[in-house]
Image (tube, rainbow, N blue to C red; front, top):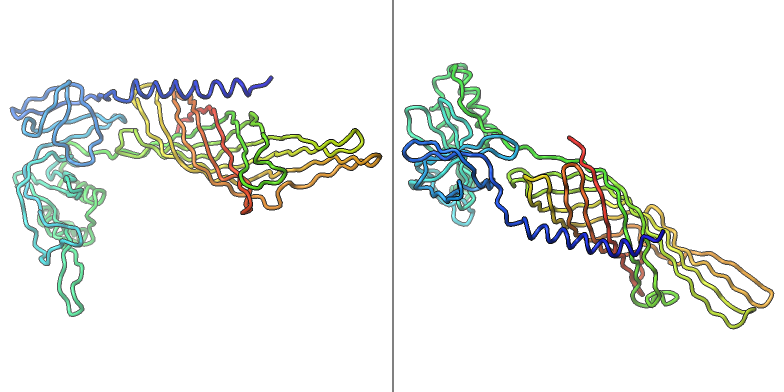
Length: 428
């Protein structure tokens, strides 16, 4: 059965269907279960547009209404993995000094400004811990002990003058702040704080140890979102077109090397990037690809004097693909995605023969030799595609353009491949 017409007709149809699906669903908002805390200390349950906030939000969408910072005392929302995120409105004195190298001050002392903002709650206990990334992208940590004021843990760079000129220095005031806040733990506690890092994991761990030390439990602990890894066995068909340009042997640039339907199979790994609401992933793949094509031509002077030629390509590659994917409808059963990336292809089979039959009256000679004296064993390509995963089953259409098989300066080649691939998501 000749699958080529079927393949060539169905691939554009598949692409059109997926594009229509993207345009229909890409603008839909994804609602998560959540609640808002009003300034009157009321809690209202409902549905929230969850945006995996990296920086402190100034407003949220809840129950089809937009709420601004001034209207709320805080809010909470359940992520797609079921974990709870809590944000509270805080009024805090933040270090306002610039931290880019061009504008660093020469003083280790911070300068403060009063800020009202939402901050993500990391620990809710006798000492509560918040994280806050402000509009300029600076990540800060905020603490508050019961009955005490809320304050920023200070960790800042500054310049200091030395005999050899200015030198970059670090003011780790947060270690002293944490030492004072946790002084009611007596078990050689100060020793544990000397090498404390200004990182979320380290601060959370030391405060958890502190609560154990004083016999206090915590009401809430933030659970970091973990990377999601999906393994996909892949199988499908590809149609590849080999073209030559320039002064190619036997005028190959003018000859038709018909594309044929070949098979592909492999294994892919789709790694979702945390805090992107399952919209972004990095997809890597090992894919086997075969490519077969041939052409015939002849030079006939008479029945007893002629030359017949057959050019036969039988190639196979192991492709290492790396693509970025953008996903739509991540909460539904159907997950549409766009992807773009690069590929490095290593030739496993390099058959590219010129078969010649020469007759000169009673003399008949058959010869076979490689067509190209110089063959490129490592092809580099760019690729793009779109697809859909439904439950554990996936289908995608993909197009790929590479730099071909010729390495000579006199002529070049390229390979354009079209794929229809099916995949099955294994549980991890």
